[in-house]
Image 1: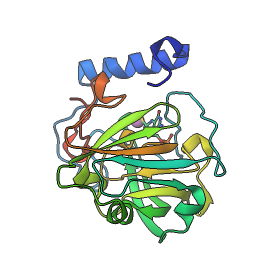
Image 2 (image 1 turned 180 degrees about the horizontal axis):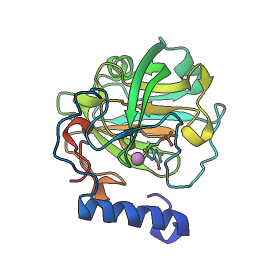
Image 3 (image 1 turned 60 degrees about the horizontal axis):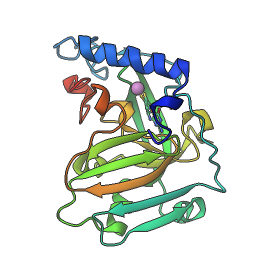
Length: 221
Ligand SMILES: Nc1nc2c(c(=O)[nH]1)N[C@H]1C(S)=C(S)[C@@H](COP(=O)(O)O)O[C@H]1N2
Ligand SMILES: [Mo]
């Protein structure tokens, strides 16, 4: 965390402590295959119809006017985008299910934004690049294998269900990577760093998995 442990609020410290306890205890692990009657629901998950807010409780002051995305590290063409630059790129729409490690899954979310595939084609990662580190305006970080980041359906998203993504859900721009647990999708995204060696982010240093595939129950690592 950029703000440092000493600045964690009481509620956030409690959330972090209870999630670290889950990791130590291996909570929610079933070791089972998805239920045959619920093929869209990864093991240990339950479907919700609302959209819960999950974050560290730090509300960063970021708007479409001051948002910036920096792409650096092992790339041939580093870049900095404003929101206008993002909007000038080819736009994609994807519909997918999201799965939070705290057990909720939400089906059929419609997202709009710029596909990571398009971004990758522009920045040209070097052959040594194998992981991507996301950094957010609230100081949150999370790591991804480049192969997952580059997967079909992964988006720098600015709309959900046709509306601007709200501040509480990570607007103006967040990552959406539906195939991994949702902690791997950074809200208030501001930086992508391509690296050769994997580096644990906020939850990964606190007992959570380096990859986080919900179908394999990769909750803890
Ligand atoms: N910047 C940032 N991104 C974040 C988080 C966070 O605390 N800060 N929390 C993660 C977690 S644990 C989850 S489940 C999802 C929640 O996104 P939502 O609040 O839009 O449901 O965001 C992820 N991305
Ligand atoms: Mo989460």
